[in-house]
Every structure is written in structure tokens, then in C-alpha cells.
Image 1 (spheres, each protein chain N blue to C red):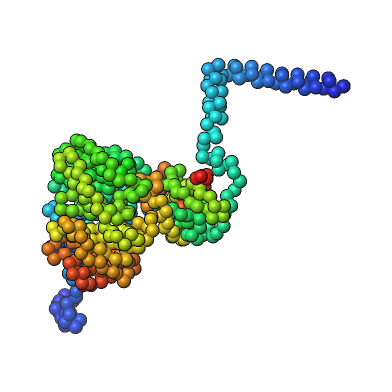
Image 2 (cartoon, rainbow over the protein chains, first blue to last red):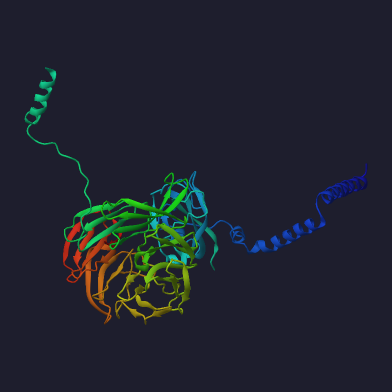
Length: 177
Length: 363
């Protein structure tokens, strides 16, 4: 069997499989359904760069210095609560059995390691009693309760099954500059 | 034979037991509240009732943890509190209520279920009594803001009014209340006699929430409310029917004192009849608005002149001046103690050992 024949058979196999898959799909899905899904895919692909997660993924890990269990750590400039880093969690994970609140307050903190400002999301971990370790109360950019997206006084255990407050994580959403 | 012997023992028993009648356990009822009685609300639940003259504790109201505050209604001899409970303390089904306590026994006499949206934070102005004590307004956060109205006379929940980006409940006129809003305005909600919203008004913009926000801690004045900003400006506000009146702002801070700022928890209070304003102040930079006060500054609201600066050994967390003609200044300090001062002379009268009070209410 020469090389030309092998290539021909490979292309035939690919074509045949594509044909069979298309036939099977056409029997299961309507044309309108296919177009709507194609549209969603195109729209989603176009919108993906706008999402904040894209910014976080687009750079390597943030360079950091300091003790994440200390209230002076750069991420905690607008954090009020108990540090999850002292409670069995980390800055990006809640302690075992607690529930992360999907709703958060935000702040902008200066990272001394690279001299840049970062947009921070402070999410409460909920569903357990207060951790009561490493209490921290920093108020940089904190605003009153009526401006609650920037208010660190609020217990942010909204949207969780259990609404008691346990501790707070601090996640980098992206650079602020 | 056996019965007469037993009868004789019964008659002689007081003699054989030492002639002391056994003490009987009773339960006190609350005496008639005196002048300068006050409520000290703790973070973790209850509120202690004290007599500022004697320093004695008179009783206690048990509350759910994180209950915002409680309000006494002397005319009906009732106390109202907004409370939130979970069936398993930290988990389970949530039930929010307005609880009504009687004066005599400080026990619950009624509970009214409200939407499970109560803002579970100890803030003094998250409750407001309207319509001559008939309607109680409760601030909600879910996380959008709203206000629940409860008829405490008929013991029924009336309505939940959506108030996006506006918080604080400042009762004005008969059935109305003002709120501070994130766009730098005040909002006036006017209720009808049944407690439903009848009208809503918005003021012009008078502050910037980023540059110098108005605190969510305010003080009641003789005809309205006193609103401080993080930077030390004071705005006196009131209403005239459906018109919101905002006075020209004036500063607590004189030239050369720019490093001083107001701050703490409930750090501002006014004696309405005497027109005196008490503010806890500290030296600090921008965004130190939660820092406890090293001094209390006293102002004459009419002349806007400072009358006194009072330095404290232990920083002040919250304060309240009682409304009597011989007023007391009640101070909760950083160490957890409660201090009582003569509110005019600033003479320290007594320390009261308490669990730390986050703020005080008149009783």
C-alpha cells in the first residue's frame, strides 16, 4: 500500500464519519435548532474576552509577598471579617463544609510586589458559625450600607442555602489599571 | 394514735427547724421606668435596661443574634424588635419576625412574621416607628434594599416597599420617613393611614458617595435629622409635606483641625430640646470612618459653634444623650464598658459593668 492510497483512505474515513454524524444530527435536530446553537456559539465566543475571568486567565499568577494570615496582607485592604486563610480555607477557597456566597463586595488593593492595583472580590463563606480567628477590619474605599457593593459591613451570605457567616476570601478579579 | 403524733410534729416543726420561715422564690416585674433609663444593645443578642442615675440593671430583653435594634413605645408600654431566626441556629429554615415585648415582664406578647429579608446588622436606624406608634418600618437587605411595614397595633405585616440603593429609616411628620441614597440624594416615602406607600419623592443631589459620603449613622433633631459625612460636614434635613428640605452644609472641623474626623459605630447624638450635638472624633486619614473616637466634640446646633472638646481615656465606640431636662451622656467604650457623664458639664458620674453595647436606645 503506497502513501497516496493511505492518505486517500484516511480522507475517505473522515468524510464518511462526518457524513454519518451530520445525517444523524439532521434526523435529531431541526435546522432552526442548529442555527440557534451556532448563533449562541458565535455570540459566546465574541463575548468571552469581555468577561472578568478572561482577564484573570490572561496573565500568570499574581506575584505576592507577605503573610496571608495577617490583616496587613495586601489583598485585605477593604476586607472586614475573619480571614478564611486562618479557618481551613485559602484566599480562593472556603473551609470544608462551608458554602461560598455568589454575591460579593469589591475593593481595589495595591500589590507592593509588582506595584500594580488589583480589583478584588471579597466573598463570604457561609453556613457555619463565625470562625472567630484572624479578625480583620480594613476600610479602604468602604462605603455606607446604602452603597452596598462597596460596603464591608454587610454579611454577604446571600444566595446560599444557609445564611450564617463563617469567614471571608479575597480573590483577584483582574488589574485595575 | 398515729394521727395525733403526726399532727404534733407538724405543729412543732418550725421550732425544730430553727424558727426561720423558708424563703419563697418570686419573679420581679419591671417598675415604672424612671428618667434616664436606657437600653444597651449588645452585638450577640440581648439588650440590657439600665438606670443611668443609679447604674443599676433593671432587666433584659432577649433578642436574636444580629437583631438590628429595638424601640420602646412608652404610650403602649411595649418594646418592638426585628429579629431573624434559623431553625438550627446556623442552618435550617429562616424565619424573620417583629417581636413585641411587654414592659412588665419583658416577655414576648406577640410575633408578626415578615419577609425573610431583614438586614441582620446592629444599626440603630434600621427601625422606625411611624403613625403615632402604629406602624413599624424595618430595613431589609436581600441584598437589594427594601422596607417592611408592620402594624404593631393590629399585629399584622402590611407591605414590603422596594427602596433600591437607599437605606436608613428616618421618621418624619406623621407617616413618612426619609432615606439616604447612593446617588447622593434623600428619598421620602409617604405612607397612607393603613401603612401602604402613598407617595415617593427624591431630593436634589447634595453629596457625592465616592468623594465624601453621608454616613448611614444619623441623629434626630428637633424638627428633622442631622446627617454627618465622612469628612465632617453636617447636613440638617427635614420635610414640609412632600418637599425635602436640605440645609446648607457646615463643617465640624475648624481650620487647622483637618486631621480630625467623625467615626465609630453610633457616634453621633443630639439633645433635641437643648439643641446640643455630640460627635465622637478621631485623628485619621480618609476611610478611617469606623475608627473609635478619642474625643467627644459638643456643638450648639443653633450657632454651629463648638462648645467643648472632651478627651477620653478609652476611645468611644457609640454614644447617646438622653432627652431629659437633666440629660446624661451614655458612652460605650472600646474596652466594653459603659460610662455615664453629665451631658452638660461632662462630669464623669459612673462606670457600669456591662457586656459591650454596640449602641443605646432611650427607654
